[in-house]
Amino acid sequence: MCYCFLGAGLTELKILNSGCQVDVSPAKAYRGADEKDLKKGSNLSTTIDALAAENLKPRSHSVNYVSSDYESLDYDHYESELTVREEKLNGYKTVVATNVIRWLIYFSIAICTAAVGIFIDTIIEYLCNWKFQSIRNCIDVKHSTIECLIIWILFTVIPTIIGCCVVLFMEPSAAGSGIPFVISYLNGVRIPRMTAVRCLLVKVISVVCVCASGLGGGKEGPLIHIGAMVGGSVVEAWWKSFRNGPGRKIIGPLQNDQERRDMMAAGAAAGLSAAFGSPVGGTLMSLEEGTSFWSSSLMWKVFFCAAVAFPTYNAGKNILFTNHTNPSESVHGKSIYFFGKFNENTIYFSYSEFPIFIIFGIFGGVLGALFVNINYRLSIFRLKHIISNRKKLLESVFVAVFVAIVNLTTMILLNNCQKKLEISSFNVVQMFCPAGSYNEISSFWLHTQEENIRSLFHYPIEAYSIFSLLVYCVTYFILTELTVGLNMSAGLFLPSLLIGAAWGRIASKVIHYYSPGIIGNDPGKYALLGAAAQLGGIVRATISLTVVFIEATGNVQFLLPLMITLFTAKWTGDFFTDVQMEKKNSWCLQTYNVVHLDEV
Image 1 (spheres, one colour):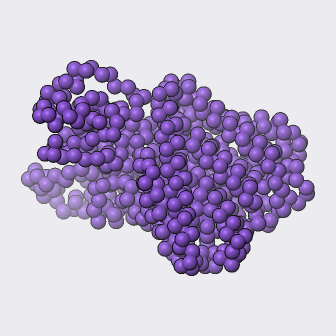
Image 2 (tube, rainbow, N blue to C red):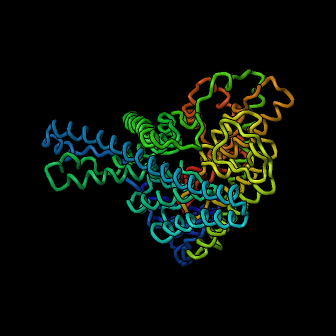
Image 3 (cartoon, rainbow, N blue to C red):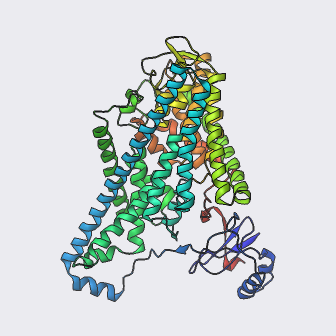
């Protein structure tokens, strides 16, 4: 047990559950100091001197190391006489102009975030279609398994090398989803280079490479970080445009930590809104999991930004794909709802199903806790043994080769043939199946993640067999565990949804076998609940995720089952493990116990 002083001005002593290093400097941790030493009456300065005398060198690859480059942000609003006098001298028109510029900046953040999201989606769609055409040509035309394996490995390894190298050698802070960085910044920790333009560019390149290569990572989490970076970059661009002219007085009041924090919170909400088509959910996510400095005026700004980003993103995609419709997308993929439109018959439920909803939440919470625990152990292993850039690059290449081999092997060994359906005839290969059929599991590996989630929600119950769903669920769980933590930009949202939708669909087939009257021939209801339980068990969010699922499905009637499932998943997951937010040495401090100084 040891202590960590966290920044000047704080009156609380944080007790970490593992060794750390202590210093009075902001956000720097030191190893040492036992709890008994302070209780015996030794004063604070003596303890600090004793700790400094140990001369323990901080290790950047230690899980308890927090970089001394992190600083505290100043979110206080100053109301001094000088400030009031300056506002009076500038006049009422300057104040109005500053407010107008502020709202224009929020509008610019929403447009830019949506544009970046459209660009990412377009590149991913193009690369995935190119990959599918090449693989189908080898399997169904040339009938060459060896050539197919080589091409598959190339389409997986080359994007992985590009995505990993740009992060390792250009901007290491772009690794991961970036959500812990956003949460830390919105709660008062300044992280170096978090809003740099280079970090934004590297993040976009890396996330495109991850999704195009078929690794177990999504783009939704990085889009939240990208939105926050856009928020910081846009306000900086406005400042550079006006600082040397008469507009300096107008833009000057917007150059402080509080305004930048608000704009980054709005950008993060806009990123989630563009990713899932959920402006209200994005606003609530920014409130629930992001900033702890919240006000009604900030809520309106964040919601405005998220509300503009969603239609802009949809309109841009519709314009781009009007003349070039993606053939791999089903009718649900062309819906304005991210998960596709659920009809009233699909999501009908009775109160007798409440125990099933609770069981789903418990199972999702257990799987989420298992995922977090394994991910934590893998992170510790990587911190200890995979330190150099060469090892990090080799690890990424190894995972990419493993993914390609596993994908093709499952298609060969599990040659489950499924009769072609009108809605599922794209991006599949016939392989060893007879004419008019396709390899069932190929639809998982050759579709985009978005189309996979919509197919699991909307395809009829006979579209997938239990065995194929089970293999896909277990395999994708392992692939996601390996991908998360690589030095690339990869998120957890969509992979978690896919894993949960797969086992939720398995449960729906079992329930249909024993009680066909509950779900009929549409398993979408339980696939949706499985996805919600799995995601809730990992990220441990409740209110915002409920709204995201409601907006992404376009139907509010399923609110109660989603609430029951998500709350049960969170409570179950919290019972086993804490949510793992300490990524890239950015600590989520509120998860630790707090002891006040007067109690010591």
